[in-house]
Image 1 (cartoon, rainbow, N blue to C red):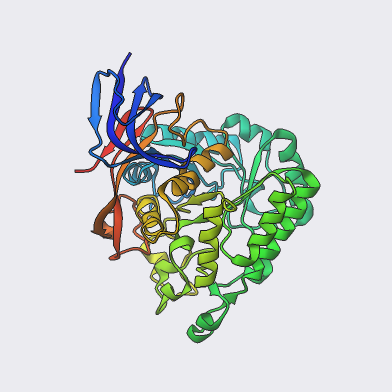
Image 2 (cartoon, helix red, strand yellow):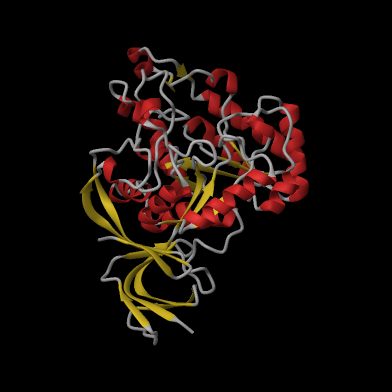
Length: 426
């Protein structure tokens, strides 16, 4: 039996919401014991963490990979290296590929590529409707048998309510998780910023924050009707939070996420049309940002994700309204989250509850924990390490990060998957 003892670590436990000094014993790829300060155990290998933080590896829900169809933007190989360097041990990948992952054959291709080229765990989603066109639902049962862990059309909102209700009913019969993008599609179409004074001064087409509330209200009504398991991929406005709270209080199987960009940036960061800050949904007001941060702290919003969306230089080097939406985030998720920690908005245990534990629980995974029996998917990091972000040093093929040249804190020192070291900083 091969055993590794992590000593002198600052253990970040998202289940107990604790941040204590101790040790962790790992045997055969699983955590077998957590030891307090002063306790000891024998092991073939001892790793001295030197007071750094040891936490469950990040489970990133909603990662875009360019295979198949857009390998020039991101491959499984480059995304896997970026994930390992960023402390992400499990990637839940989106089905918005070319072609979309709407059949078992495409899903099996993705799984083979991931297994061959990626050191982290990859769990793919399938589409909810064929071609993400919102007209005909996919064979959810066949896709689940092939390995799909959830179903989503990404940012293509299913406009036909009857089609969506049928898909939710079918998903409910199979226990499948449906991940939706809550936006009223007509109001949102063609928008590149949040409506308000800033968008007006910049002459940008805007969308009202109420579009998110309206989209969520519709989806929650369908969840009430069908009893489906539902996750809103991004809740970014204060106006959507009361509807989410009511749904949870009514006992509906509803959870919600938010991207790290919407937690740490606001609409003013767009400044003079910087396209790396063009996201979907668009960046919101500072009041919305603060409300969403508070919702993560209270647990109303369950999950923080990178919403990793690689875009090549040509698609971003365009006028703001014509540029592609999205930003990469696998490597910047943790240091960006440290902004919230250093600002006193969220504790480390709260952050890892949202980045590791809750996404794992939502998908029925055993990871995301430091408890005995959990997989030894771990990240060792220094939350105080300062650096200047250089996008050219990132492992992702695409370099569209909004944090380029910004001062940040928080460096990953090492990452383990099932007890095997997959990354160590130089």
